Image (tube, rainbow, N blue to C red; front, side):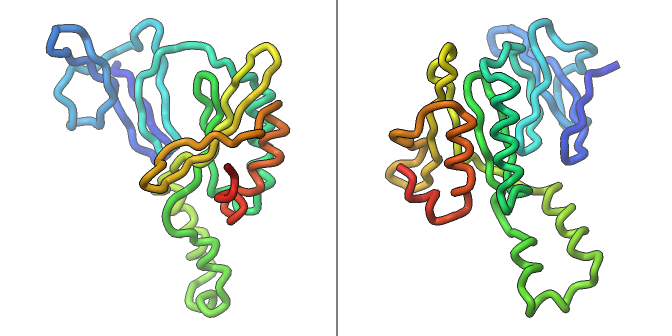
Length: 198
């Protein structure tokens, strides 16, 4: 039976094997009927299935994370306290924790407008929220990187989308335990204060 995986959007992907130009095996996930390789019946040794916050399914090398579960929990707890928590997602990579922000229309803001509230039936708000979550796209905005595994000291960066300095900006003076950094920085997400961090 082929290796299948259904992502958060309800889309099912199958693992296929193809070949590189040099004849080496290449593994990738594709939708049924959209692939030109042969379906794979078991994961190759040393690999695991990975799904990004945007629902992209891939095969990743199975390597242990340097991030401890309590550090992830501390960041998640701070995100849950944010007034717009549902607009944020967390991804844990090998040695960092990234926070992603939803891009696109915010139906919460739309439904909070008194002039538009009467236009919608009561069930429409929840249906639109469900659709929003299904099709939502997220972009990285904040990252905590493990600098010292022994002392558990993290650095922090925020994403900058200005043309001249596209990429991660190191937040000077913002190092230490990730719980402390998360407590200080996550409340600024979605505010003008966030863009003043440098």
